[in-house]
Image 1 (cartoon, rainbow, N blue to C red):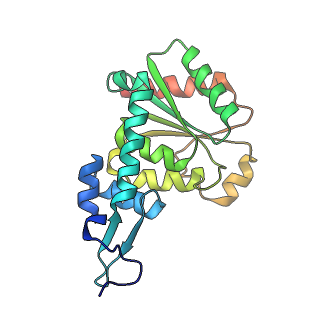
Image 2 (image 1 turned 90 degrees about the vertical axis):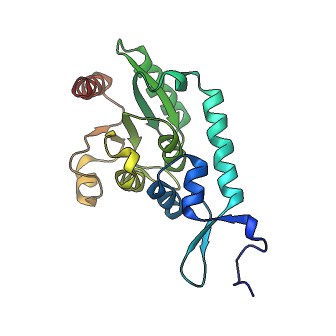
Length: 203
């Protein structure tokens, strides 16, 4: 007899390793996606994690759609790639358009929340994450924590942005000390300098 909540059909679920192989990511990344709620899963009576095939297929579809809808992905492996994460569509557009206007050899893409950002990073090489700290669902703090645990993401540079007072952010103690924080409205001259500095280190 199956446990309550288990799929009725064995073909409805995958092991974490099988899901990782299908998604083309490291095993640890798949585990983190489960913990973050990006992949739906349950545990057997023996404590083994099983991931629903439906949620894996949904992520595969999103990966395919993202690649087909973003012409910059084709060159992402040859240029410094920046990912902008902000739940405010207007702010995302300002950040993306401004960064693209700089005379720097880079490409830019965007994500509307932490879940979408982790999915993007799991499938596309990213060099710099520019992330808002206050977002619904998965906020910037939690996203950065998961990101730091992803094998593929250990070399990604991170710059945080927030309308919160820097002293309040410091009191929260949730932002890693090596992550610079920019306020809102964003000082784009300062941001450009930070990005150029990090690009120079990568060369």
